[in-house]
Length: 215
Image 1 (cartoon, one colour):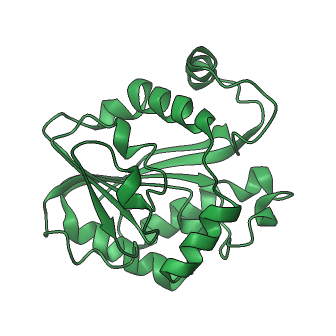
Image 2 (tube, rainbow, N blue to C red; image 1 turned 180 degrees about the vertical axis):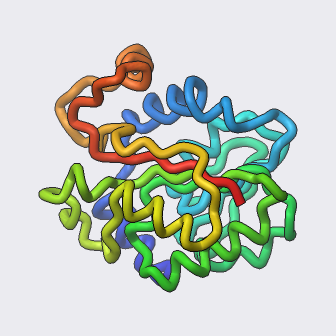
């Protein structure tokens, strides 16, 4: 997606509001991602969309970045909205961010755009700051990967790991099987089930991967 119009069309077709995401991200943030975020931190979410992650983060400063103009209406109290491309973070000061987070974003970008994003992320992160990525893992979901017409690049846990390392990032954690591909199913979504899934060594229907890297 390269324009506000593209973003509007995407949200109208592929990313309509789903209350299941509220339950999912409240639980994920509380029971998993909170271990990487301190209350005094500054956290930036790229491609924030409905702001399911950033609205649930406990941090001193929270910034949601997205091309979609509607993001300004979705940010929670105290969350800053930045209507901008994830490849242009010039509005954020150098070495001021502790965590840069993105979920289901990089597959919508070309390799060149991802390089730009990573350069910006490295600039705004404090030394030792973290980049946290949740991504569809092509190795696990090849059959459905291109059901989303805006997917332009293909990533697996192995490919993304080596790509980040080749750009000088230090991998801290890689989970090839992290979450199911989507909440758009008949399966129930509850905090208890999500908690159990996170703790389980077996991940049925997994299609999303997790990568955490340090600048």
